[in-house]
Image 1 (cartoon, rainbow, N blue to C red):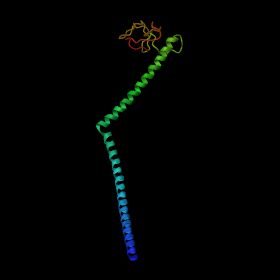
Image 2 (cartoon, helix red, strand yellow):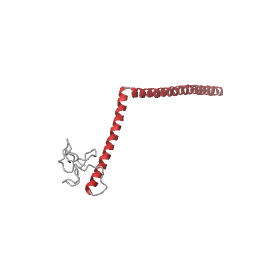
Image 3 (spheres, rainbow, N blue to C red):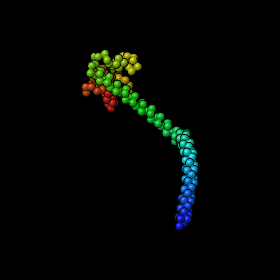
Image 4 (cartoon, rainbow, N blue to C red):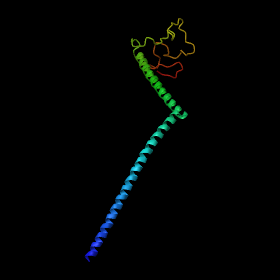
Length: 161
């Protein structure tokens, strides 16, 4: 009976050892496959990065890309121009308001058109209206404020300063 028990223990140990060795081999194979797959992934990621760079280059050099970049540059320039014009209008409004509040002050712009000289700075001997403009609008070209108080009106009556 002891021999039979001993034989069963040896067979069981041999089976366990065989299963252990088989598991180790499978684990090594799996580890090797994982490493190979990681290398392939790294190579594929490099290829994707290279192709993305190529697509970006092609996009920039294509007609659509060039038009898109030109359009963006035009829009940026236009926005800058509009901002500059708005700033100048704001300054002009402030100066006009100051001039209306204190017409005797020296803060008024000395180059402002007073109705007595041409826009080029030469004197108008007859003080005649400038051709192509409506000088009948109050406040446009005269040195006195017009009837509405603190606003100047352009010759066509649409712009208020």
